[in-house]
Length: 248
Length: 248
DNA sequence: CGCGATTTGTGCACGCCTTCACAAGCGCCT
DNA sequence: AGGCGCTTGTGAAGGCGTGCACAAATCGCG
Ligand SMILES: NC(=O)c1ccc[n+]([C@@H]2O[C@H](COP(=O)([O-])OP(=O)(O)OC[C@H]3O[C@@H](n4cnc5c(N)ncnc54)[C@H](O)[C@@H]3O)[C@@H](O)[C@H]2O)c1
Ligand SMILES: NC(=O)c1ccc[n+]([C@@H]2O[C@H](COP(=O)([O-])OP(=O)(O)OC[C@H]3O[C@@H](n4cnc5c(N)ncnc54)[C@H](O)[C@@H]3O)[C@@H](O)[C@H]2O)c1
View 1: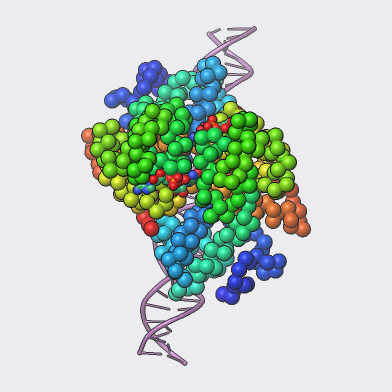
View 2: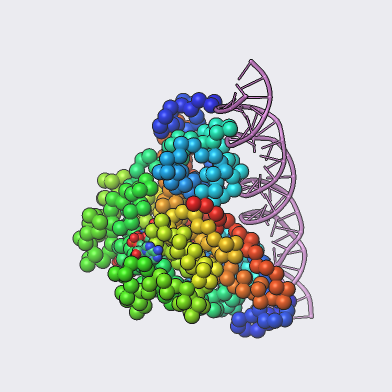
């Protein structure tokens, strides 16, 4: 129980069940833990306590312990968690040891920035293809990668085993692009275009909408303003939803 | 009760309490409803049923009704919701009628794309200032807006009443930029740099981390793969977390 | 070898959110 | 004027997530 299977990528074919099904909320936090752990590893830390890691990731320590307990028992009581081991564990669970291939569709304003983003590679992903519908864009080279025509998507996706696609096209064409990605065998989509995508149930979609984030912030501004303006001028000590925290 | 106060921006000084405190989950969905409503308005729809709007926004119709009920009773039984009225309501609650001033710090790869993004203006925000620390960037003009030096932040923020700041600088400088924004009176921050920011409790922070989104998708890829590979090869009918849906 | 300090892993209770199901309300048609 | 069909608004139940508080486990030291 306290003896882990072996040093590196675990989850062999015997003991541990192939897949503990983690709560969705836990999954969403694992990447943050991972980033904090990498940071700690760079500073030379061998182990870290739940308290320390929680602070670095901006969460409650009890929550962190419960999250990690779902992956199995990889801490040592009285000591803490082995940083290197935990990194391996989380990267394995997240499937980052595969160095997944990602393609990007829509090399416009935003897509151009994304294509040149180093944070992809450093966190477990390879951008292997860029696509656009505009003939003027096709052939252009970004960061050593040529922009291909969207019609080549299916062929390239199969060749390169692309499972994840990023959509950075105008809203009007996002659904069509999503359909093309699905047809090409992509089963995970990150969508930057505002709007709702319709996809088969075996395909996962995550959305990033800048305007929505700003509007949520705007709401809180509105609330804060109306509180301070009110006669019962209470100190507007914000009730800190789930973002914002202390650490570094 | 069924008679609304007047046509446009409500929340006067009498009837309705100045601020219904909405559940956080509801707030996060209002922007999506708003987008769907604008889309409906463009197609000329006068009213919409909870079922219809829910489909367009990719949520359950009961959830939508409960969300809207928190804003007050703005629907008509047997008919549905008045599209124009509901738009006004939601924009008022979100504080979008103020056309809030936003500043952007860090005009690099990503910042450049954001600065040129039309989706800001069309959804209730004005980008009024761009800042960077690099002397080579300062003075450059993007979309008719000049890049200023970060040292001018405080002065400009006060002049322009900037309450919302966007951080698009490298991770290492994000905390320093956040501190500068707070010192300049900014009380809402949208952060694109990976990592946890430490801010006073009256400041709201929201984070957008592309790599985290991809890692969550990667997890689901990993899970899907291990399911299909398993001997008890069940059809991998994804248990659809909260994203992905049908509509438009 | 035993003991105290430390830290993990978790049982439990509470609150939030989601979803179902239905009564109440509204408009239209006859 | 009355009845019928449609849609909202909401009570209630169930599930999920959070955080407290503590027992169990480990290490280091005397
Ligand atoms: N620019 C930003 O900072 C920003 C921020 C948030 C969200 N967004 C969203 O991201 C998306 C892209 O924004 P942008 O500013 O880069 O737009 P853009 O117009 O600069 O770029 C869109 C690109 O997509 C290409 N395209 C159009 N249809 C296509 C198709 N069917 N297949 C392949 N490629 C196609 C176009 O040729 C163009 O190169 C939009 O939906 C926008 O709302 C942008
Ligand atoms: N490029 C992307 O697609 C992308 C995607 C997701 C997240 N991010 C994150 O967004 C941030 C910016 O990425 P980027 O690719 O644009 O980087 P970049 O290096 O191209 O741009 C950073 C800019 O910030 C400026 N800067 C640095 N320190 C500053 C300071 N103290 N005050 C003001 N300005 C300062 C630099 O001069 C530069 O212009 C990074 O944290 C990155 O991880 C980028």
